[in-house]
Every structure is written in C-alpha cells, then in structure tokens.
Length: 77
Image 1 (cartoon, rainbow, N blue to C red):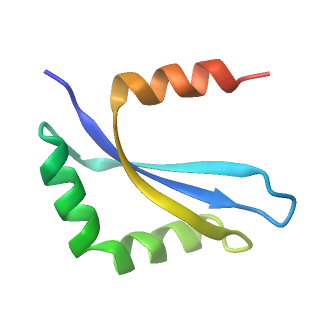
Image 2: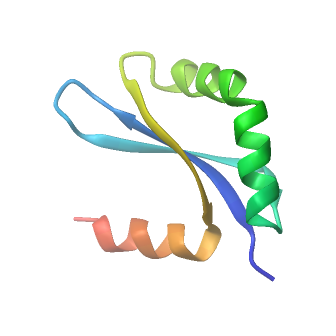
Image 3: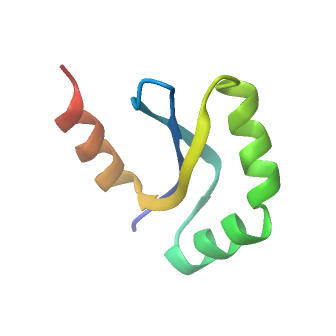
C-alpha cells in the first residue's frame, strides 16, 4: 500500500529549496491528499512558515513516501 505525504517546497533568498514534510496526516489515496491540501492550504502554509520563517512557499505537493525517499536520497551530497 502506498502512503502519500504532503510536502511543501520552501525557497530561500539564495534559491535553495528546502522540503517541509508533513507526515501526519498521511494518506492511502493521492486524491484524498490533494483534497486535504487544497482545503487546508492556509493552515499548511502557516505551519511551514513557522518552521522556515525566512523562506517563501514554492509549492505544495502530495507525493508517495517511496518517491520522496528516492528524491531525498538522490539529492544528498
């Protein structure tokens, strides 16, 4: 079973992108994840701004946990 998480891409003044991963709630259905993100986008953005106060929001994504793990492991230095 695939698990989908909400990921918020945060962009800094140096154009570096940080990922803010919200693991709770998680979703078994990507459409439910997208629906939740659309309905709660203001709250999600506020949470991200608390964690990354000096960065802007680039985008909000729903991504499978597996793809996120592959993405992160592929970008590590």
